[in-house]
Length: 264
Image (cartoon, rainbow, N blue to C red; front, side):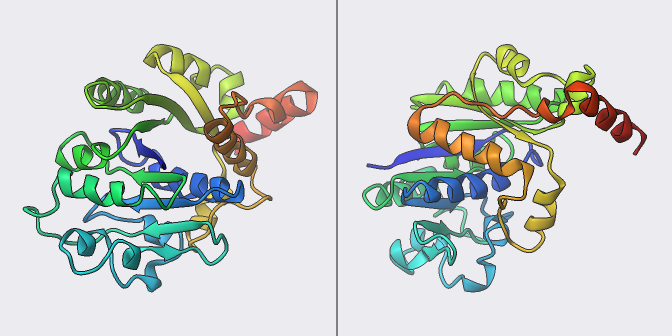
């Protein structure tokens, strides 16, 4: 029986797809069978982020429209044998791609995987509802900005009307230097404001953008690697360890780093 988790936010550009891909890799490294399902139909990017865009033969729309079986639309990650991707499509028949049909595809994956991670489109309209209807749990992604928090608050209210058993928060693109200088909201404060439990903190890391450009997920050399590892362990083993983005900016050397970063 798989844990079906939708990764959502309400606001675009907060890093849902990036988090979906990297979290999937980390769970696969824990020897869990994981499938990433791209439900952002029409504006799909999960295939690019995971580097499988040239391997697509069938996608989720092909499954829904009965042009292939579910297994035929799955692409196995070349570096992580336990990780699979079900890509989305650039165009589709609106009358066939319904919430019920998306849920049917996700339910069909139930017996083959430990985790089904659903990459949700931005907004709170029909595409959002299609993604959420097949999930049992939700990870709401925010950045430490007022507009993101306001949209996340709306999403949290909507999620409570669905059959979601567990809702958690991921704060993405956190800058430890700005948190210490009181120029950015602290992640724990954000969770308190939104009244939702905090599951993960991901630092601002330029390496992520560089790797995304070549279809790769975070590596051990990235600051975010430890943060995603903690996030995966929090989900899999119900741990509560959060990445401390402020640690390298504490003390005298940390003060110098903060001073230099302000001038850059």
